[in-house]
Image (cartoon, rainbow, N blue to C red):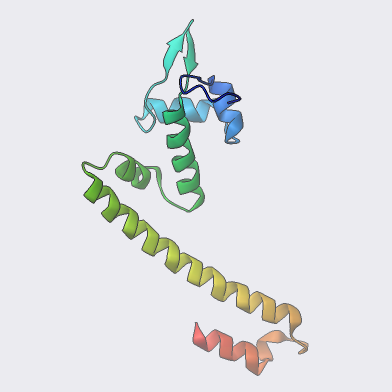
Length: 132
């Protein structure tokens, strides 16, 4: 969106392009109720800033490994307190996944720098494995 006009809207193709999606994905999210149906102008869907924010949350949530049902629960929580509770749970899950990824990264980095012919025989590598 090029202007600061809060009423400005995007077509389905523009919104899909913005997030690297295919338009049918947005239509599917509408059909399943994950995304509110866009208003139509001259028969074409027009998405608002609210749609953009919701699509951003869905795209980033999916990238973080959350299912559409988990995202629906967050986006449709019955109260702010319920939403915060769900988000805290997801935050803890993300933090655990980050710890696991960091441990895996440490193993890969050691294997790349290890002077042993077979890094799995390396005492330092085995210590890293034991710490996991």
